[in-house]
Length: 258
Image (cartoon, rainbow, N blue to C red):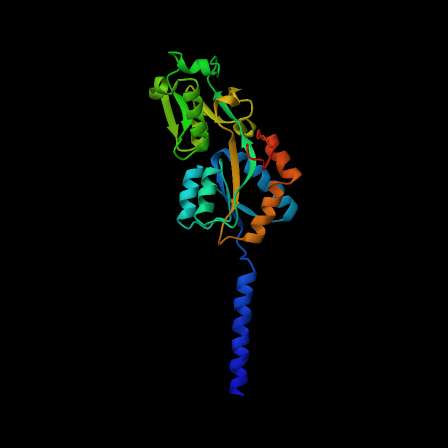
């Protein structure tokens, strides 16, 4: 009788352990999102929840800061980066489930909210242009791309004293919107924010002046793998890609290395 009781208890614990290994926790899907993707991810979040009923929590910061948080054990399920470098570094260190994939290509623009100011490369050197916004190139891929533009036009050293660094694209956008800077480098996606539509003026930067901004997504270990894969498939579906395109991202030649 006693042996039978112990056998039943043992079976109970085996079932509990098995269930804990196969059933994902009930918490929301948590996505670490690069700052340039904030507005776009909100649109994707709403559409995905409408289709699946799954709630998503977004954690927004520069790609470099999010990478540091992931390394420190932050409970994220997916990392949506503004480049491939950071996700690839996590993959190399064995922190991800699989190799990162490109989900879109970013476009760099010059944006200003000052009346009468033309957001062009030639404007950067003019004497009345005293402050130029740029995301921190050490942690923000769009900031790194902006530095490449300045180097391409041989302006980096000349304009060093004018550069005002934001922690991320989002903070740089705030600098531009509040006119703490005359103009700044940012992601084209900012133009599609419902809060910033039709504010200021902008111009696209010649894509030959900076390397392609390959934006990568990667699924993280110790996360909700099944739910994460479902969102990944949504992001790369026709609907997800259409949303990305509608927010200023390029999707042609997706998943083909350039």
